[in-house]
Image (cartoon, rainbow, N blue to C red; front, side):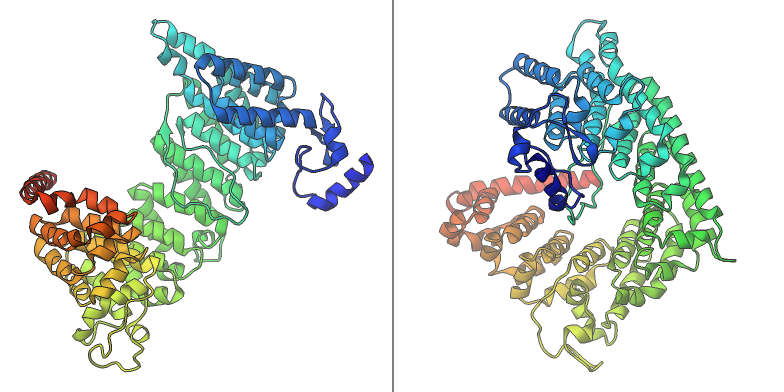
Length: 613
């Protein structure tokens, strides 16, 4: 029976996914017990079924919480006693790994150090196997992350010697983190190329630098990762970590060749640069210079910069993006002058290289270099639009807004690209065209190049990049074209914008950045739509933003339209918040008091804006 179960198992998982005794449904296998673990696929030792059940129950108990610290400490100590002697088996089991990851933050630094000491073995040589395991890597990460609490003991106590005691209690954990870092340095090439091991190295870099983001979570296969960089939290580190970070970066630099050939290794180098930029700026400048020297020294076709090849590669382009984002002015200037000048449009048209060009456009906005980059990229705007690389166009507009340069040229270029520059009567059509990223002929189904808009087309297909483009243009000094176009939209179009995921941001940006007079004209067009806006998830947010930027008279007009629909607004899940925030009950029954409050708020807002200006 046992041999049959083992024979069937590889067919079931295809040999790709490890399954665990508590989950594989094998009746005979479930009943087997072995305190030393049992042999799994490929002869690998696995945690026995009894222990898997125990750690599952521990996980359930952790979810319930504890009444006091004493109860929690006793529970943690008992569980860690069970872990002792088989920490590697527990860490590399799916159930055991998840439980340990939750238990370690509740453990003392000394206890975490003891777990790490067992995982590493006497010489630390066993760290590698555990760190490069799909489940074990998460446990090592969780243990290393606890170093952020190394000053915790001294803060909790009030007596003077506690700082030394705090350091002493973390002494084992500190030693084990350093021991682990030594193992990483001895096996750097294998670690940074390994899909699991590389994540542990990235966590180690954060800890040695003294800054941590939120814990890593498993992403589902095929799931999209959030592109927003995680917020980092700084913490105190022992002096030894400063030196160790320098040693580790030196070792990684010896493997710089991997950063341009391997996407996994490239991510480690990106983390290294990000951490050093935040915590060791001088070291970061050295690393940036050395990496750029390496990249630009590779052989390429005569007269062609090797950087142009790396920019078009998936792994190395990500690294170059990070370099550009963290670069100082001389490095950026040299990068453009010696390698990218005259190549920007071609790179912006490339499916991979266009992303580093976006980073370059963003990074240069603070410097005069932006003027040269703009003048080069603006020549290819229509081609870039045709290629669908809207991120380049949006970033160009955002950098124009930030630098306050080339804004008129950018607007003129867009009007030409969307075929609404000539005749001048087409200018009023610019907003729907920009938001939908469609040319005049496509949007209005017109094959002729003449005259005014013949038919009114309902506003449709507002897209994400179109929304971002208009939001960037709304920050320009001269916004009259956009506002004129907005005022030509019908009330139903404005409602469509207000309740659209992408359009709502545009309407909010245009109304809130307008003058009182300009805002009044737009609000006049919105009359009759306020109740529907208030009853919409997105529309209610726009209405609140409009309210906050409006004058007392404009607020009064909005309130007068909303109050007659009191029962509808109070019953709606979104509108009831609008009713409360606008104090519409006061408006309906105590008008003078409402007026007094709104006038006071208006004066306070004006005072703050004057101070900020």
